[in-house]
Amino acid sequence: MNTLKRLKGFYWPYKGYFFIAIFSLLFVTGITVVYPLVLKLTIDEVIGEGYYEWVPYIVIGFVLLMFVKSVAAFFHQYFGDLFGIRAVYAMRNALYQKLEVLPFRFYDNAKTGDLMSRLTADVEAFRFFLSFGFAQFINFLLLLFFGLGIMIYLNPALAVVTLLAMPFLSVTVYRFDKKVHPAFKGIRRSFAQLTTKVQENISGMNTVKAMAREDFEIDQFDSRNQSYKKTNVDTGHIWGTYFPLMELVGNISVVVLLAYGGWLVIRGDLLLGELVAFFSLVWYIIGPLMFLGFIINTYSQSKAAGERLLEILDEPEDIRSEPDAVKQERLRGDVRFVDVSHQYPGADDRALQGVSFDAPAGKTIGLIGSTGAGKTSLTHLISRFYEPSGGEILIDGRSIRDYDLHSLRRNIGVVFQESFLFSSTIKDNIAYGNPDVTMEQIMEAAKRAQAHDFIMQFPKQYDTMLGERGLGLSGGQKQRLAIARALVIDPSILVLDDATSAVDMETEHRIQAALKEVMRGRTTFIIAHRISSVKQADEILVLEQGRVAERGTHEELLQQQGTYRRIFDIQFKDREAVPSS
Image 1: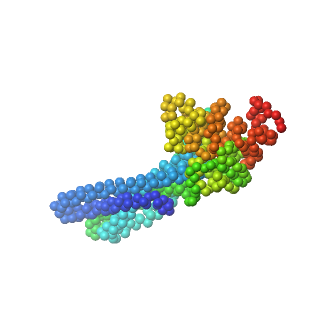
Image 2: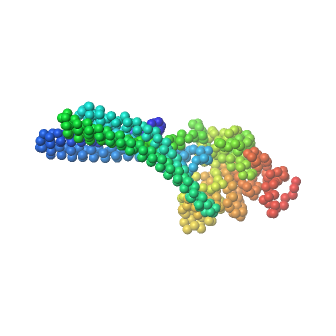
Image 3: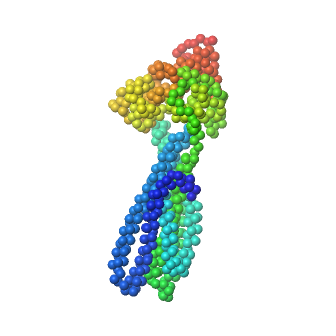
């Protein structure tokens, strides 16, 4: 029950619905256990004693009871469902909000299919227990309480003999729960792995077909499908073993009742109507007790699902705004790194080591170096996508930890190397970071990003719907839309992470020419592999293994005869001759 307690904050605010459902259940259960007493009255008094004139009254009373029970059952079902639905609505919102605030570190290792499974299948499993399983467990307790009370009232000795099987049933149910909970947890895990594989395969279908790896992917899916099948078969084996055993113990109890009760009727110590009532009552107890296996099944699934949900809800929010954080509407953009180091969790080497530099407001800093040198890591730290392992980053003379996280990022426009676009219109994608932007500003940003011309070629122009992840656009077109999206927020700091790598040289030149005006007055970080993208920067940092190996302007670095000059010679050896120093 610890999982239920920890998730109490989601369902307890709707306890009013729960109590209405349980109050209605009291009527349903109470009327249910009255049926055997009506049978006893009919057999022993009406038929046995010949009071046939009571029959119309019994029929009318029975019909009234049926009507009241039906109304009570409706309220029980409706408010029980409402209780579960409202609870998981709040839970699903909380989970989604949590996913929105979790840092990059979490998503570095998270799998999309697994997260989808948690927000859908796991949440639904928990809802089913709240709406149905929880109420059925209480129904079992009520039937046991009322049924036992009436049985003891009718014949205490027969009640004791009839219930001798209860301890055996209880032990069986306990052992069933111990085995079925890990099994259902395995089902949840296997299902998440299956959905992850499907999601990855669909997202990477172009690569799969390009590499002719369809058979390999089919085998990979079959392997995970086999694992999912096996966990379900193992769970079915547990269910198939214990449920018949519980039914056997219950049926033995019924046989004992018929044998001993029949002997009492023959002796005249028990009326036939009382035996019939006992027989009905024992099924009201034995039946739910055997059904308890299903309830435990439901609880075990919800517990396994709840534990997976708690893993997300308990995930630490490493990066968040402090209570007294500064909400700065507009930053100047003066960036300073002071002996900054960074190491990713689980990594052996540091991504950055002792990096220090100043980027005065309005200046452009070029970042160049081999893959894995730390260029992207450096810019990610500015936006607090990660926290540095050591050192300090200042903007306008204040530590970035002192700023409100939302206002900090609103001042930083980032164009990632892999441009992600949403399944929406081109207009909505460009305006994503600034919903209040005007159409004129959207078009101006698109023009500066050299995107306006190709947008206007679409039949619906800016109202063109994009496919998932911008399907239907070239890599260069996606990058230009991403640049336009960064420009419409009017950032103080602009980060271009290889933002023109997917465009041709001519388009890159036009974008750079347009960005010169955009970058004026903004602190700009340009990450690039092409020297042509950074040669106009006010200062260029050459990174090697997380350290600043060289720094200076384009001309100064060429004179140093170092890494920058070597890269330049490779890229321009057939296009430009530069005298050695």
